[in-house]
Amino acid sequence: MQAIIWTGYGPPEVLQLREIAKPTPKDDEILVKIIAANVFSGDCELRRFQIHPLYWLPLRLAIGIRKPRVKILGQEFSGIVEAVGTQVTRFKPGDEIVSPTGLGGAYAEYLCLKGSHAAFKPLNVSHTEAATVSVGGLNALHLMRTAEIEAGQRVLLNGAGGCIGTVAIQLAKNLGAEVTAVDSTEKLPVLKSIGADHVIDYTQQDFTQNGETYDVIIDIVGKSSYSRSLKSLQKDGYFVLANAPTSHLIRSLWSRVFGSRRVRPVLTSYKAEDLACLMELLEAGKLKPVIDRRYPLSQAADAHGYVDSGRKTGNVVLTVSA
Image (cartoon, rainbow, N blue to C red):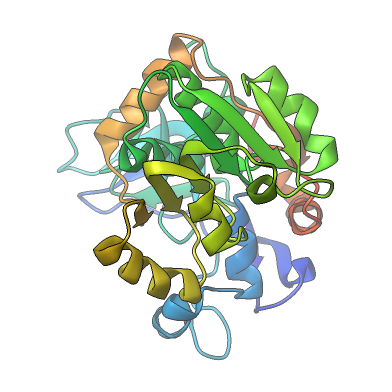
């Protein structure tokens, strides 16, 4: 089978298309023919090894000190079950599924996994669309729950134009919130089209200095001013940190003890029932994936280069199989 092999830490060129052996599922695994895989921003961060300081050493030890032991990147996919192990009862050959993979494995024609986090793909949704929901969607769903978003609240999403943000806008709107989305100029029309009530171009305006206040501020990219963000919150408001720098994490401990505003760093856990919930929203048309570009598997390095540029809105997808 063909796969994109991760040959070392560095630029997109370390990703190379190679022919490798097709895997065989163990008794508790399923073999999936991958139709589409999402190029998640986290894949690019792993490739460069641009990792949060708190996780740098544990991940380096797990993945490889000098070069990666994990040979194939790709944290989410949509595909078709081709074979199942003798202990597998939940899936059968022919089932169409979506799933996160953990650290990787989706940039290949076939993948073996346990399938404990997988969900069935809706029949009225394409594999390309479904491949974009697992990681970004599960993170966005966790952000909504952490912030306890309710109808009528004013919610600001900083860094709303990526995999997580484009889902979070729609989830917040489904909950009845008034949503303000913050990102760069070229992304704002798309964010309006998927439901954002207000948009702010961060290259032209700092949302923490516009005099507005919000019930919830969710910082997806971890780049907003900590102190000014707190001042932009209503009393008892939530400041949710999705990718917080270490300084924000330390200050959040003080705020949680002495402040009236609630600061919540988040670390998402993946659950099959949550992914199934997202698939129901997809099937009902209440969640629409935002796809910027599609690349064939052979052009995975080009896809990574585009994601690295910071210009993508929503998702970039690899079409792996017909």
